[in-house]
Length: 561
Image (cartoon, rainbow, N blue to C red; front, top):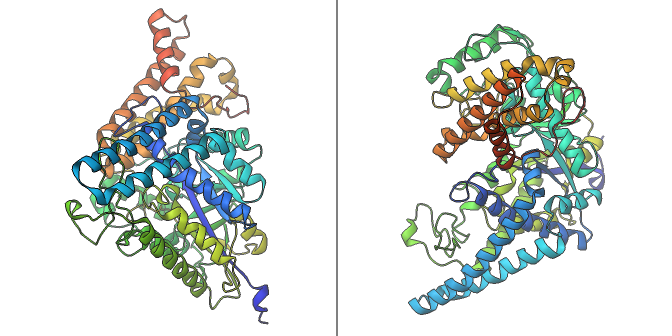
C-alpha cells in the first residue's frame, strides 16, 4: 500500500564529528593550540550561529553532532578560554594591520576584505563572550535541551578501538566517554561515534605485533551496548559486507596476519542488506547502526568533485601573514597559489544558494523510489567553516529548504530516525574503517607500528589493575590517575594518523613518545610503592601541569579518581 506523500518517512540525518587531540600546553603554531582556536572560531561558533538563526525561525536543524571527551574537556578549560580570547583579539588586530598595509602597498582590491574580516571576527568575538558566556559546551548543551540538536559521545581520547589489544582498554575508553558526557551534558549519551568509524566484530583475536596469546574478544558493538549506548555509525562498505582491504595488506605483513586471523575465526556469514537507507541491528549486540551514504558524502567531502572545490569559494591554503587571514578565492582547479584572485563574499553566497538547492534535490532524488528511508551523511565538523568557509551557511540553507513544501525529505536526528524507522534486520558486520583502503592501514603500518608496540606493552602492564578492582583500591590514587591519563593520551588515533598522512609527523612522534615515557615512569613509581623523592614529586607536578586532560577519571568499578 502506497503511503500518502505527506505521510512518507524520509529523513536526512547529517552527522558531524568534532574532535581535536589534546593540544593545550603542547605547542601553539603550526602544531598545537591553534588547531583548537581555529576550529572554535571557524567552525563551532559559526555552527552555533546557524543553530541560533534556525531557532529564531522555529526550525529544527535535525543535526546530530559528536564531541569527543578530550575536546569537551579542552573547551571547558580556562586556559582555552583565555587563550581563545587572545587569539580572537590577534585576528581583529591583524585585520586592521592588513587594511593599513594594503592601503600603503596599493592593493586596493583587498581593502574591502580586510574590513570584512574585521566585522566577521567582531561577530565571532561577541558570540563567544556575550551569547555563549565563553562556554561553547554549555551553548551546544542548551540547543540539545531545546531539541535543536542531538549530541553524541565518543572514546575518551579518540582511541582506535579496533586495534587496542584488550577489551578492558576499549571498555575504559568508552566508559570514560560516557562519564565525561554525563558530567557536562547532564544525561547519558544515546549515540557513539566510533573513532575513524573503525569497527571490529568479536572473534579470537591476537595483536598484529608482538608475542601474545590469542583470546576471544567481544565485538566493539557489544562493548558499546554494555555501556548503555543505543547506536553507532559505520562506513558504507561494512554494510555491504565487502572486503575493502585496499592494497595495504600486501605492503604490511602485520595487517595481513590480522586480516587472515579475522577471516579464519569470524565464521558468521554477513547478511548483505539491499537497502543502504535503513537503520540496522548489529549482530550479536542488537545495537542499532547506520551506514554512511556515499552519494551525499562525496558531494560535500570531495574538493575536486564536490561543492568545496567551487572556484568562487575561499581558498584555504593561501594566507596573508603575520595575521594568517585569507583574501583569495580558489579561482580554478589546479590554479597555483600565486595566481589566486581576490575573494568576493557575495559571489560565494550565490554559489552557496545554488549548491544548497542542488543538495536538497539530490537528497530527494536518492529516496525518490523509497516510501521511507534515512540518508546518513557523515562529515568531520571542521569541514564546515574551517576547511570550507562557506559550509555553515550552506548547511543553514539546506535545512531551511528541507523544511520547505518542495522537499519530501526532512532533517532529523539519529534518535528520531530510529523512533520513526525502528530497525529489524540483524546484520553481521565485517572489520574495517572509513580510512583509505577501508581497513586499518592509515593507523597501522611500517611507520606507526612502534606506537602500537608501546600501546600493547602498556595495556599488558595495566591489565591486572583494570581486571581486579581490589588491586585498584590499594594503589596510590594520584599515580593511578596519571597512569590512566597518559595511557589514554598514548592511545589517541591522532598520532599514527598524523604520521601516516605526513601532516605533522614530527609533532605526532614526539607526543606519542612523551606519553609513553611518562606512563612508563609512573608505572615504575606505582610498582615501587615507596615514598616519593623530591625529584619524583617534581616530575608528577610537571605531568599534572601539562596533561591535565580529564578533571576526573572513572574506574572499571565506577569509582572516581
